Image (cartoon, rainbow, N blue to C red; front, top):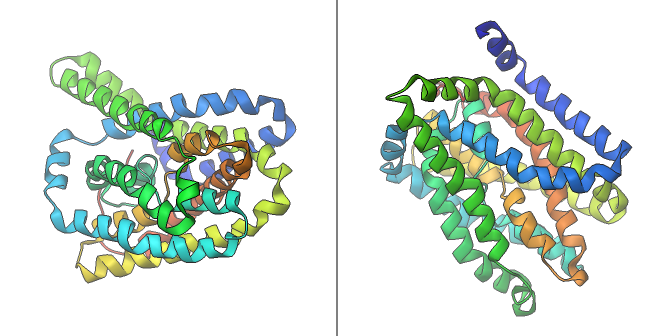
Length: 326
C-alpha cells in the first residue's frame, strides 16, 4: 500500500493533467452528462477539502493564525493590490456587461478551497492558508459588493444574490473542517479515527483527479458553445496568473516571509474562488447569461496554471519547505 501511495505522489502532476484531459474528453463526447457532473462538483470538492483539512494537525492552525506578518501580507495582497490588477484587466471587456461581471466576480475573490491542496503540493505553508481561509471568506463577502459598485456600477450590484455565496462557504469550509476536527479528536482515542485519517491521506491524489475531471467535464461543452466570445478572456486570465504570482513574490519579499510562507502567498493571490462564486453567477438574470461561462473559463485556465505552478513556484522560490500534503 505504501508503494502505491508513493507512486500516486510521484506521478501526481502527470495524473492531474490526465484528469483534466479525461474530463474535457468526457464533457465534449457526452454533453448530456454536464448537469449530473455539475451537481457532483460540490460533494466531490467537500470530500477533497475534508481530506485536506484532515492532513493538517489542529495545533498548527493556532500557530498559523498567530503569524500576523503572513496574514497581513495575504490580506493586503489579495484585497488591496490584486483588485487593481483585476480592474485593469476587466477594462478589456468593459463593453460587455456579462463578461465584465463574470471577470470581476471571479478575479476579486481569493480561493479558499483547493488552493490549500496546491500550496501543499508546492511545499508551501498550507496550514497557514487554512487558518486564513475563514478571514479571506468573510472579507470577500464584505468587500465584493463595494468592489463591484466601484468597478462595474450600482446597477450591477443590484442583481446579485449573496445567498448562494454564503451557502457555498458553509458547505465547502465549515462542514469539511468540522468533520476533520471530529475525526482528529476521535483518532487520539480510537483506532477507527486513525484508520479514517490513513484512508483519506491515500485518497488525496485520486480525489484531486476526480475533482479536476468533474469540473472540466461539467463545463467544457458550454464553454465550447461560446468559444468565440470567451476567447477574449484567455489572455486576461493568463495575464492575471502571471501578474498575481509576481505580486505574491514581491509582497512576500517586502515583508521578509520565509520560503513556505512566500509560496503560500503566491498561490493565494493567483488562485480565485471560482467554484464558490459560480453559484452566484448562475443566479444572475438572463441578461448576464455569459457571466457563469466567464467564471468557468477562468477555472479551466486556472486549473492548468496551478498544475504548472506546482512545478514552477518551488523553482522561483527555492529553499526549505513544509511537508507537502500527502
